[in-house]
Length: 80
Image (cartoon, rainbow, N blue to C red; front, top):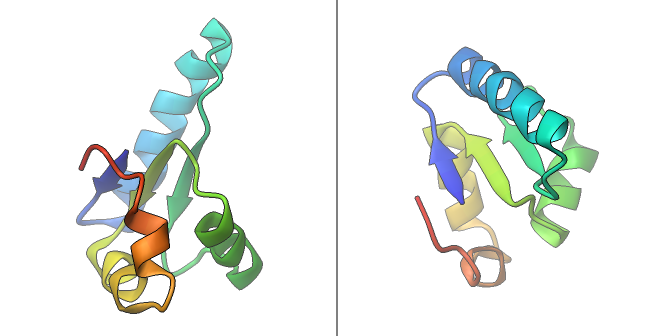
């Protein structure tokens, strides 16, 4: 699932507000944020092993679409 947030702060808030109940229930779901502040090593890992739910900004989405790995990265995407 890809969630596109207009603001980085909103994406971070959603990750926190969604992650806590998911963790408390014990669901095997990974939730991560990808913004301009995300370290490059984490962005690289997200491209190789995407989380179940990725919250990102339009700017980061544009970079993902333009990357050489775009086809593979978006191949299993089901929900936006």
